[in-house]
Length: 129
Image (cartoon, rainbow, N blue to C red; front, side, top):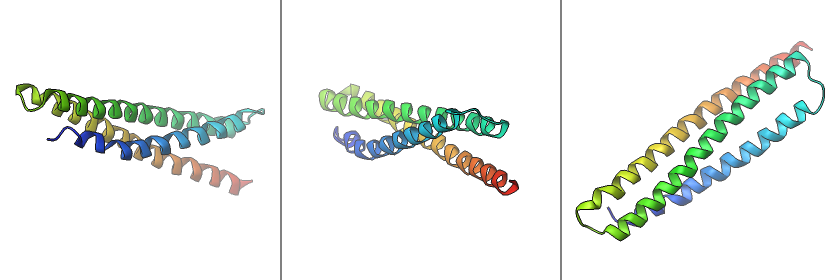
């Protein structure tokens, strides 16, 4: 594999990082808004669920940052090592980066399902009042 291929993946991962970071900031502001005043039991439950969501986003963002580092390292190693017998090292680092992205995407999918669950809970609660 050519040395520049892992680096071409970076813009896509960068977009995922930007999206995840934006969601983290929005969710953090939501949590801050809920906790800024005295919470009732329902608000406390929702804030606890949202903090778990923030944890999921933080894990996903961390994995995306690590995958970016793997892609850059794979490209650099591929350029430096060329086609000698150590060629498999950049490929291993590339596979590690792709694996980290897949785990991060799995966490983001999980985050999406939990977000819907929280919204449904909030909707049902608002209907009762």
